[in-house]
Length: 211
Length: 258
Image (cartoon, chains in turn purple, cyan):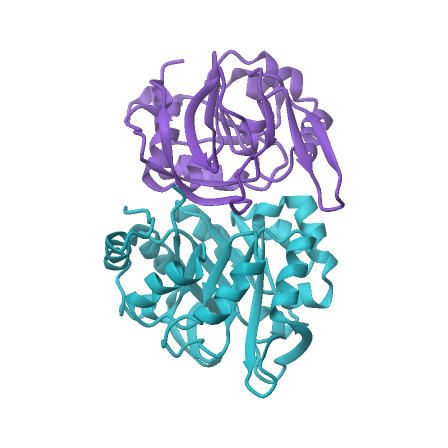
């Protein structure tokens, strides 16, 4: 590990979601450090930014607005990696239901111009939960040494349909974006922090990639 | 393709991993963290930690081991036992668990399932069901407080009605523990799981009865469950996970080989 990497500032944005510590531990397992913060100046000054998330977009976006983080995240030019709900927050908007039976459209951060829709699983069980393979993956520094056929851990009922910004594809009843990317922003629908060696490789690639 | 999951379950009592036969006579298997790490490395797809004392005792239980597990393993894990409120769930999830599983508290207040699903997302709300086949009535019945034999009691729910109800309320996954089979290693209750599968549209995990490798291929192929949970066969080294996964792959079960 180079000293440059050790001195790099890796930030995990405190979105108020539950999996913050899991993401931090995943970074620590590959021998690096990351700071969980909602401090605007620290986020701006970071070399790498991770946007984690789990749960529902409405709750997460409310937290982001309450902490006034949206303009900061939108202004970032350094590499930003979203995990699961964090990826979904990178889009224009997310469809979302709750168990009181309402369906809403939540405005998200609009970093990548696409939308999160209910996963069209063609009658398969939802949530899509468990280890699934990538059916294709683009050439991108974050996916270095990642191949189609590698397993990742997915847990979700909503997804970005395959489109212009799709960086990796997974199939569950239908094909959907396992990852999306635009400019410095990249998001994974799966959980790299819970995807064994393949997931660790993605986190390592991201933290080691040239800004 | 979505892989079928192999899920070692670690029953936790007073901070140690234990296993009893038919929910009784708990013997200590070992420390939690090294066992968790060992299973993750061996190819487990997920782990469940079930604090078997918590629900029955009604006391506050030290859960600091959750953080220690989250630090060392890179596969998902679920914590069960003693989660009665949104605050309990939040604490466990913040410590790094991916899912929380509720059982007796959901039977006492079914709306808890919806409140947890709305706050944390359906994907992390697992409902555990302890089901017992009553030979006299020919019905599968749901039991509660099974962590403590003296408090274990039958509820008014039949198993399949409860499976339907918890899905309506927002359960993201169901673990069906077939009590008649638990700990005796004679195979999963395929007949019951097939019927459960027919009414279960969320992931269904089979629990109770695994004793041989064939039991896993049977339950995946015959009952189409999403995952198979087992404890003693893994803890006692009767079935190495890597051998099990190779066998399943050869039998055309979709499985993640590490």
